[in-house]
Length: 326
Image (cartoon, rainbow, N blue to C red; front, side):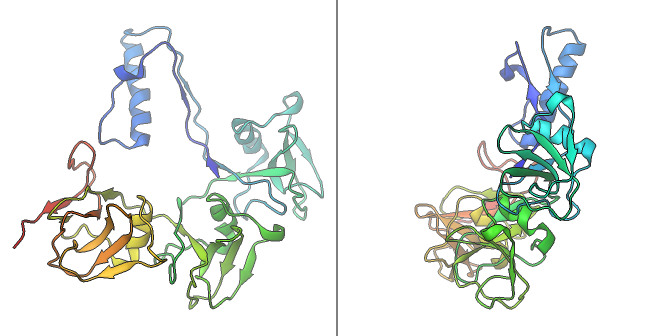
């Protein structure tokens, strides 16, 4: 899914002259850019700069699959529809929103595949024939798609609800098989929202005891923690208190390029690995070291909780320690 963010258009001014900071997030960079330009214009140091900032509430554009529609509670109003859909490239014929009661369109706000016209369908019982892309309110939580692996599941309290499952899963490549969300109580799948590896079909399981047999990818709420991947180096490990737990390790490591070797998290008590979550530098295999006195032999990249504002180096920031051998 595409989530709309504030857009900035700049002309006749080099970005290199704007204020920025090496530790800022992308959101902070945008804010810094806007503030910098405003100050420079106020000081009459620059002229001829055209600054366009579209402050539009976040919205999500779902795929144009048969049966696809916004989840309950995520429908836009007619006024929001015209504004949000236009931002996604939709067209208002004669500058008017087409409002009607149709059987074959998505309920609520949508954009037609052919012609990109914006429609607002008042028929709550309509069925999207696949020729309309629903435009919905954005999810309040960020989405992460976990890798394939036996037993892989979302962290505790990081599951999407059944109502949010379609919007969340479609934003990471999922689709509706036969136009419907597949709901069941399967013993061989993870609980909650997930996609099947073979065709990315979106499922939702109510079986909290289900165990993933390795053919399904959980769709989870992304943690709010900032993650730092440190470079491989002898003695490098996370500072105590800045480690991810074993349960958190897979989602944290996957978000920075880690993968599961043979579909499994490698739990190792060897003395040559750092304690906690890490990635083997060459293979990117995800490890969790259980040896509290383990010493990084230089082939593993620790994955640590970030400490906002703490600069580790030019490229890496967070919280890590160097421990000499012995």
